[in-house]
Amino acid sequence: MLLEVKNISASFQHSEKKILDNVSFLLKKGQKLGVVGESGGGKSTLTRILSGFHPYTNGKVQIQNRVIKETAKDRKWISKRLQMVFQNPLSSLDPQQTVQQILEEPLLNFTSLTTKERKQKILELLAEVNLQPDVLKRKSNSLSGGQAQRICIARSLLANPEILVCDEPVTSLDMTTQLKIMKLLKRVGKEQQLSIIFVSHDISLVLEFCDVVLVLRDGKIVDYFVAKEWMHADRDAYTKKLIESTGII
Image 1 (cartoon, helix red, strand yellow):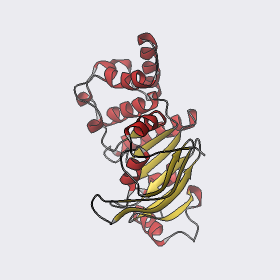
Image 2 (image 1 turned 90 degrees about the vertical axis):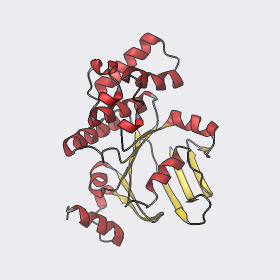
Image 3 (image 1 turned 45 degrees about the vertical axis):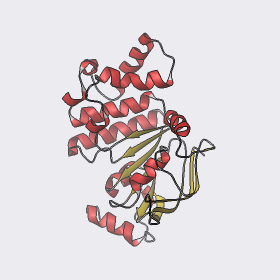
Image 4 (image 1 turned 180 degrees about the vertical axis):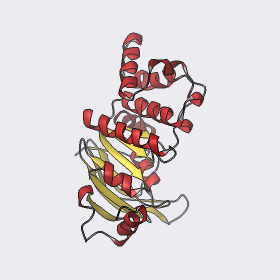
């Protein structure tokens, strides 16, 4: 199993109130797992735990049979295997750096490629995310939201991770750009046998994109099901409410 999360809980700092309560799930290679729920349900805390930036109080998180904790050593190990794509792409990029510098960073951190090899790898990834080479000379603050998110995805893929965690990756984008980014994620996931955790408040996106769906409410899993079986009568009432709010039924 690529990722195992077993009975983890997490609390606010200096408080006994739980953000996550006894959360468990599995992620297989090449699988797309959707994590859905309203704001405050614990979705972002879960992504921070997975990337090693938030402690959990019990249970375990295991990636490739290694139990991970909130330590600098673990974060470095995790970042080679798990990469994040965030909601606001422009705030995720250094406005002082060129796109070339941004995309070189994971190659410098995780590979021993030569300058020529790094350039070739970057050009290949740009083609993968449908961007032209002339974008390399630009700084991130001159990019559109869609271009910036493609750069963020390319940067994550250049680390050659096993898992890509997408935390509301299209929420800040217009509908046309959303569809393009979703199509891109689906394609690269299939081509690279990448496991994707897709976090969203929009269950219609999750049902369309993911293989398996996990529904969080107030830090607890209230539903966990195969996406194509979403119409089954035994869905939790909260899941039904989320589905009804989208107008897809």
